[in-house]
Image 1 (tube, rainbow, N blue to C red):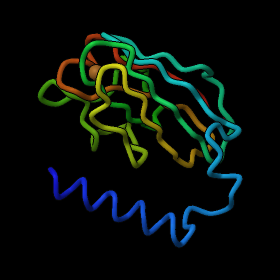
Image 2: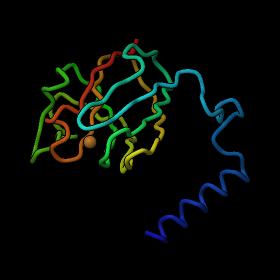
Image 3: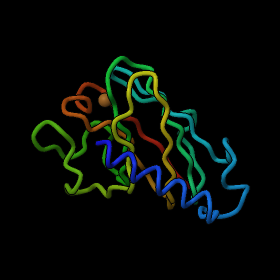
Length: 144
Ligand SMILES: [Cu+2]
């Protein structure tokens, strides 16, 4: 774990030196198109459920007392009807297209961000920690 953290710091440092990540405007702390996500036991809420296609910046706050995660699927299935396997949503299941990357290990009180490119369609965001999806950690949104 310590070695992994060190590797992350090296990557961040190299990025800072080489200014990777694009234009200065994209490094703003609250870029346009930020969607605020609130997670707790056991729900997910988005500040908007009608998003614009293109780059989307999710800011995911865990207001609960447990670790949660945040992932997005493009799907026309109902938010509570995604394919499941062994108590979690089957991320390779029929009818769902997982959007990468995802955000894992969001500790209680912590906020993590996720940047993805979304094309027009219907989506469902979930927490896929075992049991959390079926307990209600799912929400639908659309992109146009
Ligand atoms: Cu969860």
